[in-house]
Image (cartoon, rainbow, N blue to C red; front, side, top):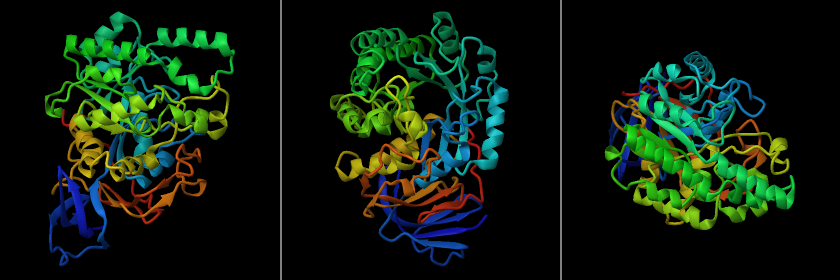
Length: 444
């Protein structure tokens, strides 16, 4: 593996910003300090005028392999992630077949070891019938147990109270939950079908996937976690009401944590009028009041991590009518730069963005030697030019589906370089897929 010397960087790390050089050897950060110009390196990068931060650890992606590879696959979607400054990801189980056995987990790991440009780990999906599989997971290699408490994909809906209780009581690692109450959603769907038939305007998506549907399910998850002492991570919060269930305590003191996703922090319900089903997702993007509340909760620490819920579909699929269009969108390539728009608007500090996208995910999932710029840690780092504007277009989208909800948007910041486990994977608009990422290890 080539040695890399980064000179004259402004490092954003562990609540500080400081000027320094970084020397990378054997995939890890060998030395951090000023005046490293004497180090002999295979690759030297002058980072003058740019910021260097830990790569984003995306705790929530859907890369569609196996079984749905017409939408995306591990190779294409990890490449899009790396182009956007994501160096590691945890991928969800709703593929075909669903990842609900340890054997299928191993199969995904084999695929990723051959094709993933980013570092990787996978969730095991919970069902009504796989508690034995859940109890047999390897805590050091499996990211978490994913439970759909409503709004299921495949056969992964877990809504029987006694099964929920057992999973919360007996899961050996973190349980990550999708919280929307199916009974409320079905009732809302029936009401809107009575008004509009099958052609429900997409602007009513947040009325169907409502605030109450989210709150009822999330409050149940939190109640069960408190009852059983479960390590719980609630995914993609979308409402102001849910925030009352979470604490602003330091992450080290929490057993129940929460995630926000970039689209819920960027878009609001007004955007349905322009974007339509392109921004249809579950849970739904809701009104500006909810978006602003989520942003405030990121700042005050009720929300612990920011992820993408990257979930590509083909454009033809997304252009169908309300019930025909699947939920989800490709977000990995533009996640970090969308958050940096928050920096330019004065909403987020650079230090906070690094905390929520790198430090906190590494701490929350207990990832070994990643998420920080520290000597001895794996070199997962991103070089960003904060003042290099560019516009999203079909010609620069890396996801296999070929479209983005940000199409036509002019971002003010650009990911110039992404280094994954010491490999120069992305630099000045070019990918180098010659070295794959590494499987994440967890200190559990």
